[in-house]
Amino acid sequence: MTVTQLAVQAALIRIQIIKMVTHAQSGHVGGALGLADIYTALYFGVLRYRAADPTWSERDYVLVSNGHTCPVWYSTLAVAGFFPKTWLSRFRELDSPLQGHPRFNLSERIPGVENTSGPLGQGLSQACGLALALKRAGKTNHVFCFLSDAEHQEGQIWEAYLFAHQHQLNNLTAIIDFNQIQISGTTDQVMSLDPLPAKLASFGWLVKEVDGHAVSELVAQLIPNSTQSPGPRAIIAKTISGKGVSFMEHDFHWHGKAPNREEAVRAIAELQSTLESYDF
Ligand SMILES: Cc1ncc(C[n+]2csc(CCOP(=O)(O)OP(=O)(O)O)c2C)c(N)n1
Ligand SMILES: [Mg+2]
Image: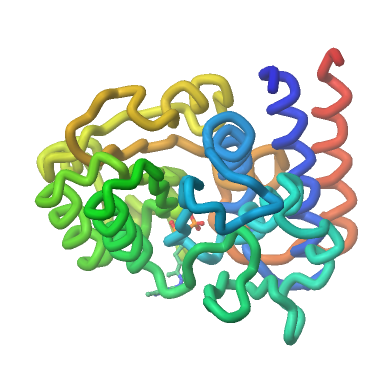
């Protein structure tokens, strides 16, 4: 895909996020909107997968630790063809496959969803186990794990960083949504993570800091083995929560609030106007 096509895809995903959370009248828009460019770069420029065969043995894996941001995951999976877009309108309904936090069940798989998430702090441990198993089996699948910044305030994350370094998991990439907000304020107000890059480097990880909205740069940085790292990689993506909707950007109050109808109409109009700015 060209850079313009990727940007258009990201805008369409953002519109879908607004629609599904508004329809459900609950869910998390801030982090989801902020992550749309990274999900787009990953799924349409980097990952190996077959949407029609989601358990293809050679696929790369995406695990999500910050499960509350799943509107962006579900929207991306639908656009990529893992399941019909009609599923999105049942987001958070009782018995819908698309719950407010993703669930993984071997006997009832949701195409493209590889882990259960919601309780923050656990996803990197899940990803470490998977990456170690793949490595020991001599497989070349790569494991990507999305994390939020605020979940770095939990101890289990740091245990996983130690583990991945110990086992030199060079088939593992952590993508950190560094939006500097959390449920009740900024990360600096609640419990500062600074200096996060130096902390991760001191744990033996290769650290890259990227602009989480520069799609082509993201594609280049996310490609596995582009860095020839002997161990695990962390991509710290500087993002803007609520990106693309002016009245949601940088505002932690939109971490987990559903727009009302009038706000949704305004948000979608803004996102559509960015679409019109692209020269096709
Ligand atoms: C273990 C655990 N504690 C608390 C919560 C409730 N909770 C949901 S999101 C969140 C923090 C949000 O900050 P961040 O993870 O950075 O997400 P963002 O708002 O940037 O999307 C919290 C405390 C949770 N999901 N899991
Ligand atoms: Mg955050």
